[in-house]
Amino acid sequence: MHFLSKLKRPQQETDFKLTASDHLNFGRSYNRQLNGSICKIPDSMIFRYGTAGFRYFSPLLPLIVYRIGAAMAIIVNMYSPEAYGIVFTASHNSWRDNGVKIVYRNGLMLPKQHVEFLEYFVNLSDAECHKILDTPGLLETVLSKENSRLAAEDKELRTLKDLIDAAVNAGYDPSVSVSSKERLENKNNEKRNIVILARDTRESGEYLEQVFELGFKRISNNIEIFKAGYMPTATHHFLVAHFFDYEDPLATLLNKGFDDKTPTTIHVDCANGVGVHWVHEYFKACRHIDVKLYNNDLEDKKLLNNECGADYVQSLRLRPDGIDYQAFEPYTRFYHLDGDCDRMVMTFYCDKEQLHIFDGDHLLLLFIAFIRKVYENSNGYRIGAVHTGYANSGLILAIQKIAEDYPCLINIRTGTGVAKLIKGSASADMAVYFEPNGHGSILVSPCCKAEFMKSPVAPLFELTNPAIGDGIANIRAIEYMLCKLGWSTKDWLQNSFERCPTRLTKIPVNSVLKYASHPKNEEILIQPACLQSYIEDTVRSFTTKYGNCNVFLRPSGTENYMRLKVDMEKDDDPKALELLVSVIENGVKLVEKLL
Image (cartoon, rainbow, N blue to C red; front, top):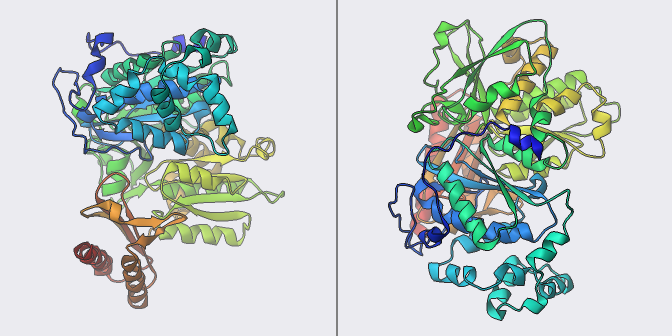
């Protein structure tokens, strides 16, 4: 672990330090903030672990983080030595929010049963939580030989909640417990459990690190906790995933580059976030590339993601603050990251002074076009273009056209969220996945990796981040592909697709719990059934009158909103799209009156 000492970690930003006496400060009735104020949380408020972890208004986080610290101490101790990760970030959200995301052992997504346990534990009342945490010998009893035997005998693995309930009800019995000393003796001296903390640049991040550590050490003191400081989410994910694989995992990710005889300047909008510390690190092996940063103010925390960055550009289709496009030649590329650098989109002005936004759909097609150009695929491996229901219909048409003379290309549509995209990628031997928001990467099946690493596509696997979507690494890969294809920005535009008119919006509802999507196809509503029938009738009617159109309506996972995406293949009537949105909104309002 000597490489950890090389990390340039920020100095502690405050003299405040939590102590063991602060354990009672993080309940619903006494949720202490960094400034000493209290943010009480009613028992009726329920927190959910979404696709990006727990992400809420920053004052709510201390309670959540303290309890996650205690819960993770139990989870980490249950398994053989691995690396785990905790990153404090709210990604593209406003500076007012923060969140906590868990990277499971070996960089995997958190298993469903652990997500359910964390939600259960975080949402306990203060009395219920203290009953568990105050149980003598809680960790030893949960890890006891008897519990291990019972878990092994069960046809289905006993849930962590079951084990803890049993420990609380049975009380502490040293005769059946595995002592801390015995656990340590059973572990390989060369490989120990470690929890790696990282954070973006939000003001509450350092405080939440202390809160997590306090909760963790309430249960266990025998696990190393390393604070990596400011670090992009994807960089942290790679570090956790490959902690025991390489002598210096970060060097493996960062010291990758390519050379070109033509000097190049890239322009990167950092959204006033953590990318300011890391973009240059990713490009130090690309000696011909000069990096210019924009929106790189870390002093004023309120500027984070404020009218700049990937989410602002992609979702609002607006030019960001902090960049004067007219001061540059037409077709100059500007890359836009979000606050934690997992998303990236690209913009440029053409010679007609029109702003072009290349989002995740365009990035996906560029990867596919590059692979099609350089890789003949004589072995017939399946190449997957993986996307969600939010992909623009123009992208789908472009993929289908490429597949006509490149039959190994398969079109894979998944549910929303990176976890589902990664799962869907397993259907192909090599897969490129992207969300329209600019989050994506390229994956390869282990059984085919040796073959692909000998092919012209091999540099893509080295320049990107295989652990998870990495906005900075994807800039590096894009510059490589454009270089090898000999494409300028104008060439990329000419080889891209025509974006179908689209609209994204959200519709407020009284309770999102009254709506449900099909578990195998979230583009179909199964509850209430009448709303799905209404959507299908509307689509048929509009298709007959205006041409093919698509409607995707699904319940939000965290808010009382229905999220709506509509697009139309033709733009003959500029009012048709808004009319379609209005008809669907009216349908939801009508259903709300009936529920």
